[in-house]
Image (cartoon, rainbow over all chains, first blue to last red; front, side, top):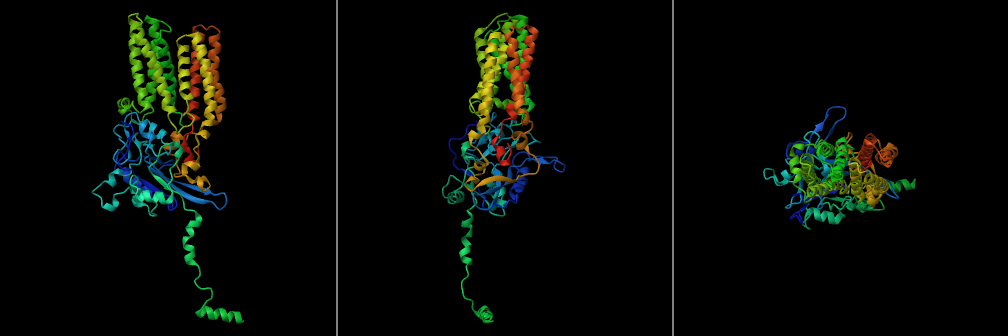
Length: 245
Length: 290
């Protein structure tokens, strides 16, 4: 049934740090690489080496410029993938039951064997997290690398989503939001983790950490203050000698 | 939203077809034998033809049977169930009228109710989407229902009823456009809420995530042809309501009635194209396009 579970035991999801993301798109590529070889049909490409290439991706990085009222503009890189919403509208619209949210960990998945490719779930998603594969004709979306995180054939450090594992800036974090002491819950609480489009009422599990205020970034500045006002040694002699001239 | 011909044909044709079935089920007109055969043939051709057209929108139609399973949560599934139930009951009713000269009125009433239910469930597929504020309002089902019943009455030769219902449908269409034009702003989604960056300042797209196009842009950020929207609205209103109402008011014969039906169909197709082409999905905000 495409009814949503009343409650999920765990709430697995991501924290994405907009302060740290450098916009390198490594998460986009590692996601495409892992998910084209594993869960479900490959992520199709059309005209990959031609004039108008297009393809299916489960994660995409936008870049925005934000201009404060007073002060210079700043660039924010913005990775976007499925937010594994608690009130996922993509699940309830599905006519076949292919789209579902798992009661045990809250991951939203598509059973491709039941999908008719009607695209209604993609219409229902405000975030553009679902793409109909143009080659296979079935709906593709982030699986939170369900085939990595529980995979005991992988070394333990690899049992996290490919995008998190690959991020060179440490801007992506994976964990359980149902546990208030988990890494992601604490990060989100400390840094004011945000919901995207809260007015849509989807209650996303994934949280975005806003860029730190510019003044807060200068925590190192006091450590760089000069330790002595009056120079000594060679500089002291030079100072005195030059003043005498 | 992408105005896919399959979906425009589906909603327009099946709307008319189920509208006609609703009137036939009520015994308006009370026909039997060959005359009934012609009426039911037209009604089934339109409703079934529309449903077949809708399957061209599917990427993987081989699983279509599974779409009847999720009626408890999904409007699309409910629509499938209603459509099949309406077609079966109206098929039985048609059999009685065509082959046995009988009017099995209870089956007819049930069939009529299911036909109206089918149009309502179709409209709810669009109305339920919070992501498309223009559709997410009570006037959307009112528009689908009034157009379906107005067109159905026109096809059923119910001159007085058609006249009233078509004028009503025209008024609902005008109200839908008026309210719909404001809905995106009312819904309150902006690039600021979409990115959460509004607290810092004014965000704008600096660099899109991909240089080419993708499924999202093709399917949900369709911006082609909107510049003709105002003219198309006038034209669709003239063909959908204006001309048919004038013809109906002048006591039509068979030929002029056929012209009224064709004019109505052309108008509905144009209005339905606008229904999709003018609908803006909130995902367009991320791309700084609507």
